[in-house]
Length: 121
Image (cartoon, rainbow, N blue to C red):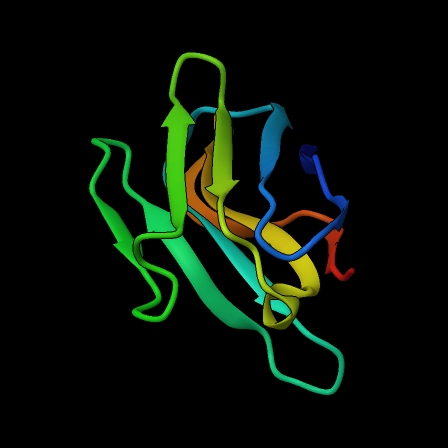
């Protein structure tokens, strides 16, 4: 079994910062791309950022410059540093990863359970 567990969400005032973390655990052979997505109330889930095993990053255009994605391949973890947060950043943030298991080399898409980020004064 493979699990992705997010942490670090919470309530922050406008202009503040938060750091989200995602840890992958279980029967893991390799992790390909990892990413963060978010879903605000009444809206579709949207891309925040992705990162390749080699560290190549991709950001939603509107978030570039405020958010920074990173990963530690040795620890199977990923982080998202979010700065200058605004009320429109309020959403549930989800960790996503393409993971292959020892018994099956095919990459499968996994999701975490999500962590709430609320930006409000």
